[in-house]
Image (cartoon, rainbow, N blue to C red):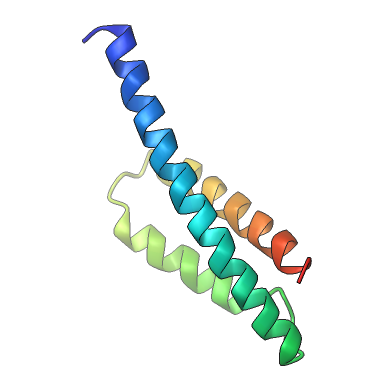
Length: 86
């Protein structure tokens, strides 16, 4: 496969990820507003652990897990930071 074809595939994936990121941040903001209104903490360690455990069970690739885990943790960090802006 040619490099330009592979790069186009990456660009298409990045576009999809952008759309999903915007959607996730919108929902995250709504969650942050709810938490603020109900005097709940932004960080929920138990919830984050459960999310990571659930995603770990869905991924069948041992090599990718550490990378995906880092990816998820960064997305959660950004979500919490965005929730604080509510």
